[in-house]
Length: 375
Ligand SMILES: *Cc1c(COP(=O)(O)O)cnc(C)c1O
View 1 (tube, helix red, strand yellow):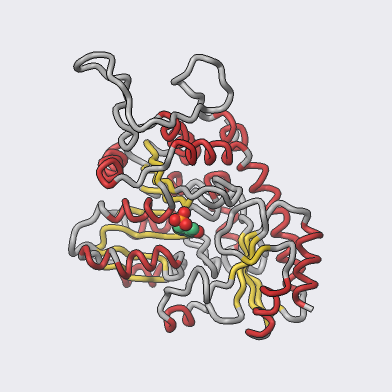
View 2 (cartoon, protein in one colour):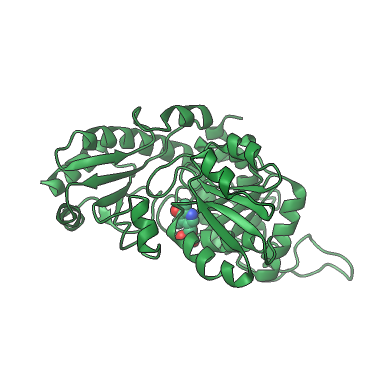
């Protein structure tokens, strides 16, 4: 089955007999038992719910894993996986990780005795020097947010054979990138973004490559309880049905917009993986089947950056990404406000940087709005 077919048909609902084409919303907390010692397979919605399972089976199929779990948000998914580790363990993480993940690692995970070392995972030597006999995992986000650096997943797998390779696949989704086929043990998603796709649902996923890791994560999830609600599971399932067409259209727009921004006199740099001059263009072509639709760009001054944010009309000045609406974000005050200043600046995340999540509108309309805002 081709990926675009899989988004629509990979999982059929096995629980109902009416022929309903859409998965039913099992809005129930608990399930009655037919007799003592007998179960329908469902007991209580924290440990299992048919609507949630449908979304989980869909992610498992799309990512090619052994099992998937749906969480109430991307952050609760990341938090659950940190419970795999013990005090004294070390994780190596991509240095320009999503700000919320950094906030979790630096403020909560440290209290549990976990050490997170940040390294430029697009640079094999940097990862090599961060490795120690306590390294239990390498956590990568590719492309990174907001600097669009790309990690060679197969190379990471080889470099740290005894560590779990964890890949946040939020930006590319399984439609463009299959981390498990490149050696990842766990795939993380903020399903809030492209998977749901409409800026209307918070959601997270963990997909495990092997059954044992899946069972450990499942135990953590049912014990700590940050599960996706039945209604939100329905919404993300519905979103995934159109994932392929949304990803294609948004990417087509992003290529046009990046090309136009590159030649704008007030734009000093464009970070988009799909531009042939991007340092990881060739790696991306080998490793993924698409470049996605996230673009960061620098303008000539802080004043220009702020004026763009104030002047856009069609484009919405809002946090988040991956929806049908084009959004513009100011990383320094929004997604990356919690990153210590020095670390932030050393990554190039400064007052002149803007980030676009390109939507599925007509490219011409998005470009016209940007060009007017840049005037
Ligand atoms: C948004 C995001 C998260 C966090 O997900 P939420 O659904 O907002 O909790 C994690 N990683 C990446 C790359 C994200 O963009």
